[in-house]
Structure formats: C-alpha cells, structure tokens
Amino acid sequence: LVGLLSPTFDVVGPRYLRIMRQPVGYVTGEPLVVQPVVEVLDIYRQTISGYWLTIAVRIQRNSGPANGILNGTTSLWTNESTVVFTDLKLLGYGSSYKLEFSCLWFEPVSTQPFDVDFAGRPHVCRQGSSDEDACTAQ
Image (cartoon, rainbow, N blue to C red; front, side, top):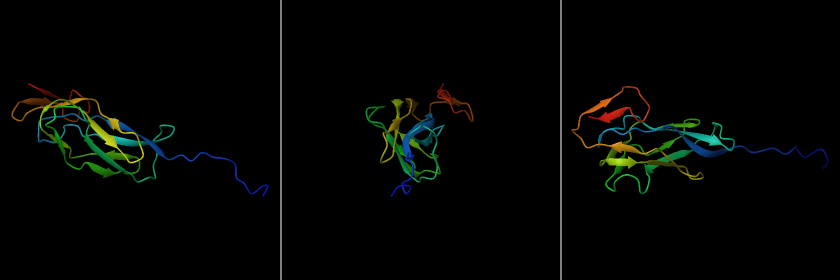
C-alpha cells in the first residue's frame, strides 16, 4: 500500500452566504427599489462556483411591523455563485424591515434594516443607485 495513498487535501465547498447588494424599500406593494443580490462563499470566504443551491428569502422575525408580507420569487437557484432577486415586494408598511436569506446547510444572513412606506406618498429616487438612501419620502 505504500505509494498508493494520495497526499491529504482540503475539500472546499460552499459554506457561507454574503449579501452583495442590500435591498432598498419603496412603497407597499411595489417592487423594492434595489433588489438584493446574494453570493455563495467557500470556507475561505471566497466566491465559489459549480454548485447549484437554492437560496430562500423571508422577512426576518421581529423586524418591521407584524403586518409585512413578502411577495415575489422568494426561492431561487444560484447562477454559479450568485443569486439575483428581481421581483421582491413587501405588502404592508413600516420601518426596520430586514430580509433573511438561507440555504439548507448554512447559517442565515440578514440585510440592513430598510423602510417601506404607504402608497400615495411622494418619493424621490435616484435611478440606478444601490445604496440605502436611493429612495426618500418627501
């Protein structure tokens, strides 16, 4: 058996989720102004590809008012190492909502808090912005 054993090596697979783009709310029932993007990372916290995983999103418990309902596509397969949500919207309004992203084998990750306003209130939004101040009530 001498010479038949291979040297030891690390098996590096998916291990963590990281939020690459934080969501920005708008008004109840409308798509989020900035939709979230989530990445899959390996044990070294580097992006990893070649794995097809389902990433789910929900409103984090004890965040925002209890009246919030998340609509849209709330479960997506990774496209290589990234999940890009495109149609998430909140029904209900209030402040300090957080979204929580999860995959079966990983610890969930949560967004920064954001607000969702009631319909009919005028807003000013910077088009193409991806920061938390992209949309403000007037």
